[in-house]
Amino acid sequence: MQTKKLTETVSVAGQIDPADLPKLHAQGFRSVVCNRPDGEGDDQPLFGEIERAAANCSVEARYLPVSGQTGPTGEHAEALKDMWDELPKPVLLFCRSGNRSENLYRMASLDDA
Image (cartoon, rainbow, N blue to C red):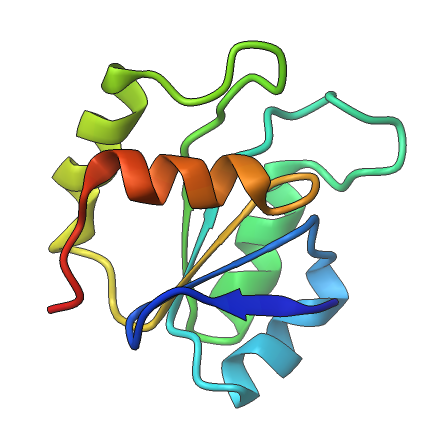
């Protein structure tokens, strides 16, 4: 699993696995946001599995699914803005490849604060 650092407070990645959460916590991540809808691919874990693994590592997990067909919308960007201040930093946004997550972050125009 590779992460791409966008700012001091946010990185993006492709699909993570529940077993990745201890490693992500050790790398300093305090929150993960899943941008991949459950059931999008046969090989992906459900968000509930990610959420349970995150809780076991004291990592906050949130679910903000974005369709791979339509990509992020203004509503998704607003939802990310709404949760941003509550999320412990740094945050890892993830989807299948990381592209949707990066596009969503840029659409939300969040500052590195």
